[in-house]
Amino acid sequence: EVQLVQSGAEVKKTGESLKISCKGSGYRFSSNWIGWVRQMPGKGLEWMGTIYPGDSDTRYSPSFQGQVTISADKSISTAYLQWSSLKASDSGMYYCVNSGGSPYYFDSWGQGTLVTVST
Amino acid sequence: QSVLTQPPSASGTPGQRVPISCSGSSSNIGSNTVNWYQQLPGTAPKLLIYSNNQRPSGVPDRFSGSNSGTSASLAISGLQSEDEADYYCAAWDDSLSDVVFGGGTKLTVL
Image 1 (spheres, rainbow over the protein chains, first blue to last red):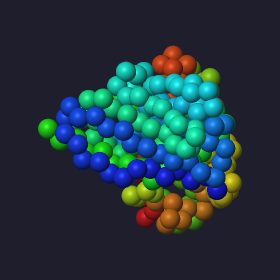
Image 2: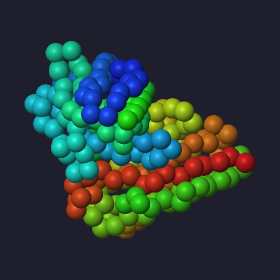
Image 3: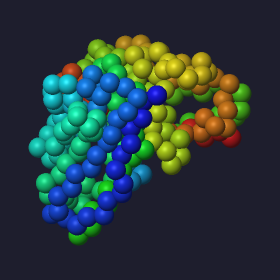
């Protein structure tokens, strides 16, 4: 069974950096796309980007290109989402997602990491 | 404003069949497959339908997907109280080079 276990909730201040994680298990980590989807409070879903751990091919949504960095360490089956300087508008729930086929639909979802950024 | 358009709400009584529509354009639904996600209250979304009409293992056959031209539809038959959730459609958009989602439809079981 595919499992995606994300790191815990974070409370940060504007301007701070942050890296959240997602550990995959139950499948061959290097061979599936793994990505991130944002959901702001009370709002819908937004795809941020995805990475293929096998060769580090990374694709970003134009909305998030340059705003975040997606990476993966296949030796520990873990993907990351990173900010260098948080803004209050980065507050939201971030879901890790796994794609066994196309990188653009999401078979499995992590439990979510709530990020709260205050001024 | 979402690229894919869904009705904000839908409702039905137990046992009924409820359709949820998703309208797009030639650059998304018109040229790529549609996927549907279900988000139960307070939980992470779950893949419900992929590639227009395929159900992942474990999804009841009460859920079905279809599309025609630049629109897609999710149908839930034999409605049950546990189907009360938010439903999202999504597709790749060739013009935007982005995965686009609908704004979501909140389904209420009366």
